[in-house]
Image (cartoon, rainbow, N blue to C red; front, side, top):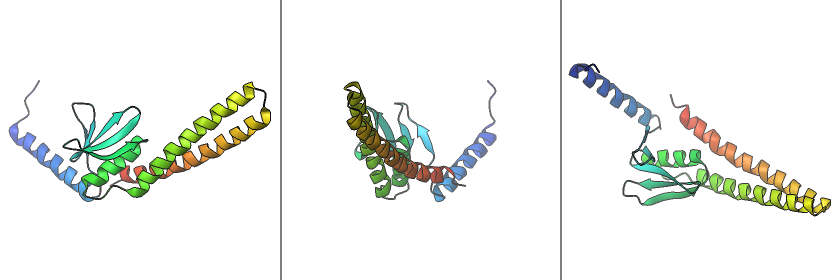
Length: 155
């Protein structure tokens, strides 16, 4: 492997610091992967346990969680790293996404059971409820993804 001259290395390092600072002033803290597999965003890290995400500070104190979507965890950790409070709207949308996801799964299961019992009327009711829950779940997810996409489009 060829050695990089110290002067060039210092210039690259200086450029990287400037880019990170520029992005931070625009509202985006550059994430990094930690050795333990978690994602570091400033002084915070995102950890995944049992299909849910948790935002921890550098002392491993819980700051937010459990969170259903990775995008929600990223938005919250980014806001905390910028010195802002955790976004209540994102947390609420994520919470409701989880509720509606559970409802959709539960109603779909009930519909399948009633189809096996040949109770088509009850099955149709549960399928309708599942479809409504799916639409609401997708609404909450699209709200979160819209905010996440705005965060990713920082220029």
